[in-house]
Length: 243
Image 1 (cartoon, rainbow, N blue to C red):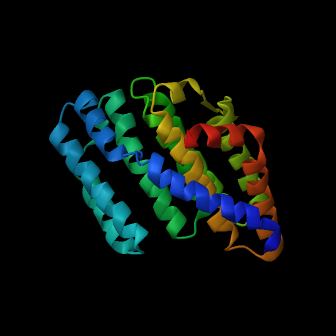
Image 2: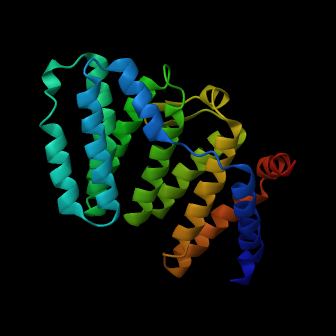
């Protein structure tokens, strides 16, 4: 579509720049290990629990839902949640809730996926003070809400969510989703390369998503992306990145 030639050209440039400049990605598994070591009394059992949930996530991504659910069931048998401390209970939930939400998403239960993802954001808020890297996991979750909205054909809601995400990441403006606050101060506690990488990754994902929609919805999504890349704040960001 000729109208968006500049958008696709810009996307190609950004992808190359992202590979060259922003290789640092959010390795949340490494930080979960750090959290387990800091929070948990029985570290070995928690690691086993976490590893089973990670295997469940991998299987669910490949469509092996039954295998994933069996792994989830297996993981739950090894920890008696009633015996955990308050912090351990919250970490227990932070490990399981987002993957349970993804399983709902894969099965087409978008309402349950949305609810689980929102709960994950609340758990991230609890831990981000002690572990600031969790803030980027929280951004991933609000991005997931946009994805769920796209899949449930609520394009307008998805674009409203994405507008807030880009305000946070590009302009470093505080945003709130319902009762969950995203304070940009946590961007300062982490790598700026990771922030820029996330901007480009999310933009790429949204443009790819547009291709899966009907023509009118596709144009609305691409118009939104075009507004983002032509915004003065984005252009300043790009100039800084090239330097």
